[in-house]
Amino acid sequence: MTTTLDPWFADPGTLPERTRSQLAMQMEPSHILAIADEVRGLQAAGEPIANFTIGDFAPSEFPVPRRFLEHEQRLQDAGENNYPPAVGMPQLRAAIRRHYVRDLGLSYPEGTVQVGSGARPLIYAAFACLVSPGDKVLYQVPSWNTSYYIALNFAHGIELVAKPEHGFMLTADDLAPHMQEARLLIINSPQNPSGTAISREAMTEICEAIVAENRRRDETGQRPLFLLYDMVYWQLTLDDVEHVTPVGCVPEMARYTIMVDAISKSWAATGVRVGWAVAPPWLMAPMKALVGHMGAWAGRAPQLATAATLDEPDIMRPWMEAYRTKVSGRQTRIYERLSALSAAGLPVEPVQPEGALYVTARFPLHGRTFGDRTVETDEDIRSVLLHQAHTAVVPFTSFGYPEGTGWMRFSIGAVTDADIEAALDRIEALLRQGGSS
Image (cartoon, rainbow, N blue to C red; front, side, top):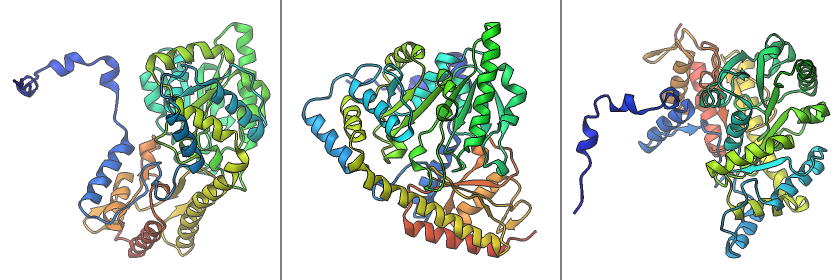
């Protein structure tokens, strides 16, 4: 006999409002995923959409390194399928430290690496272990998901609008009015969504300001200001752009920095879920406990396969070079094509990409009418590009940026070369059409 439960959900009355916690009531779904759902619906209906929305990879275009998959299969076959230590497999933690010595020139001591199932639970753990309800968190907009982590921890977010002329990165001057009241600062470089990177000069000035502020706090007994540095895209920095770290610029920042990294973007392995945080050793105990309580560890075999692959730089180097060349080639193609349209007087202003998977461009179309739609908002621009140029992008307003700027993000990992060319042709046709004013 089967008990049908539908009637018990048909008319819940006020039960939903009385059920949810304060946290549940203030949580919002991802704007980007909502856009992606709309795009998938159009594609399922047969619309020829070039989908530049999600920061992911089409496996047919960007497969996971074969060497990693060989290691993982060997380890699965060997029975490496039970629980890993909550802090991460020792082989992987040691391989990460060797990786940073070799490729970043940073020698971290043992006891500074926490492994997790991708970067997200480690970002959450860093927030939870540093930020108390009401603490102030400094972050820039545009910014990927920072506001959600602030809400999860009942913190007080202070948005700072990053300027295009600074590559959408914050400066020490931007931070100066807020330094004495903040508990945490978030920096992401290369950045999602802008595809730009922070310079050595800007990073050094910010880190020197943090060190000076924390020396002041040492004298008063205040809790220190920490920097959470999200650098999951650092291996996708373009060849002529320097990737910098807080600790590499100002070594004393090792005491105040949590760096978050992962194979998700560096190896096109978003579904594998192996990430790590490198942090002061005195933060390891609470982070380990929290990751363990959440069960947010990566699988044992993927961890060991990551360790083995990291320790084979000579084998991985040709793969990485080809991968980076393909990513940067797509970014450059979009940037150069949009730059040519801008030079021809059409309403588009691209930003030179420096890393990650993204190309940023401004479409100043407000006040123009395309078909039956008059552009009043950035959402209208996104909709015109989607429905009339069959090109799906994400507006910077989805990353917290002010309305009315026209900035859009192109993500290049889940499209084909043919998709890119067709989308650029359609965008050109749309912009040449001009729209009526």
